[in-house]
Image (cartoon, rainbow, N blue to C red; front, side):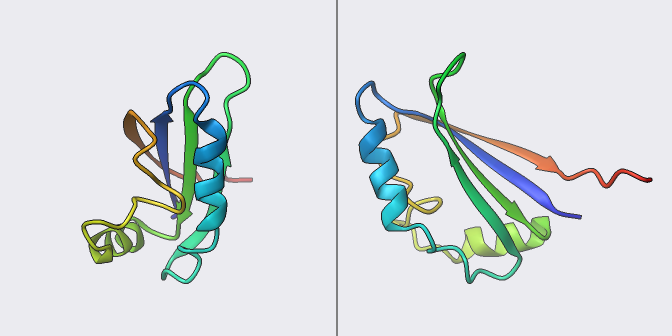
Length: 99
C-alpha cells in the first residue's frame, strides 16, 4: 500500500519564487531512492498560503529508510530549504478502492 507524505511549508511573503527555484535545482534528487513513487510541489493560489510538498512512497518502510539515510544537514526533500518559517508533516495511506 502506497503512503503519501505532505510537508506543509509556511513561506514568507515574496519568497515563493526562491523556494520554487530551490526545488527545481534538486528536482530529481530523490528519484533513485528505493520505493520512491513521485513528487509534486503545490503553489498556493486561493484559500491557502502554504506550499505543499507531496511525495508518494511504496511503503512506510521505504520512506523511513530514505529519511534515516539523509545526513543531518541535508534538506527534508527535493528543494527544501531554510526559507520556510514553519513546516508540518501530514501522513496518509492510499486507500485501494474495490470495484
